[in-house]
Image (tube, rainbow over all chains, first blue to last red; front, top):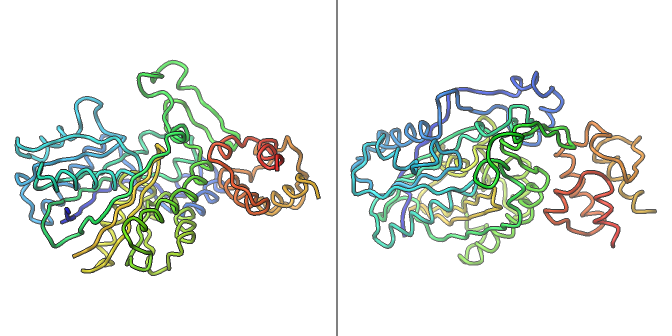
Length: 336
Length: 75
């Protein structure tokens, strides 16, 4: 099994507060959504900042804080849905920026909010089988760049972030003990950018405004989410998937020191905790000042728990993430 | 008590508005507080009241009370 050895993250400097959004959406609407979401401000990219620029900062920070030689890395996985380039793989660009060696496998994974368990699973497999000996996993998303500025449902929720995770097969660290990954492809339409690829291209009528029944405004060139449908899916599917994972791993919630969940919005996370009977001392939140940062959310949460000293040797952690696809993943971690 | 009456009680409670007179045509456009957050709360309350479970697609298709009745009334 592989171990998480170190983590570091990067957030944009720009802060977008609830008060900043009042003129755009009205105070009442902002308060209604943000009360549900438990978010008071978001960190959003400024012009010129991208997923790769945040990823570079996070990786360099990790190298510096943990004394890691970039030349020791022989696997770089960049997991994002908001990469700077469609061609080539963004991991190759990051390879140059970080000065990694030639004998280093680099590739991208396109995954949404469930990105971290998927990335960890792939890194773990490649490390365990000896394909690589030291892996750098990057989860970076700048979802705010996909949003239509008038879309109050999504603008109020999202922020941007990148997290770098270093892994190898040596203790101590966060031992990856098990994975549980799943998909309900019948729900892919509920979070999508309708016109962004070969099927429907990003031009022509795709830019016209669409006003939803609930009064939100979107276009077919921007990210769209059916909030109630996704909320409903998450409330039922995520607890069910976590129970399946616990059964598979022969773990219970009682065994876990922390249950870490994708920071979609606070009400949703609270309701999932309630469904799983997770006591308050095993819960952890980190979204109030950063927003929902999509695929970077669950690694940011873990990284923050480590920074705050919430995790000690011997602790078992359950981390679960879920999002577009519809996709979900859970990982069992034991800190040694 | 009709299905519409039971739904009306739920809508009045969730939207915190006792004056709501529900019809099958009632939609978010008819009430400023029926936003996406309210839709989630309505669905959860309706599931509890009628002991049913909406599918994700059924939740996505809710544009008015008529769409809710289509799920609830076959019972």
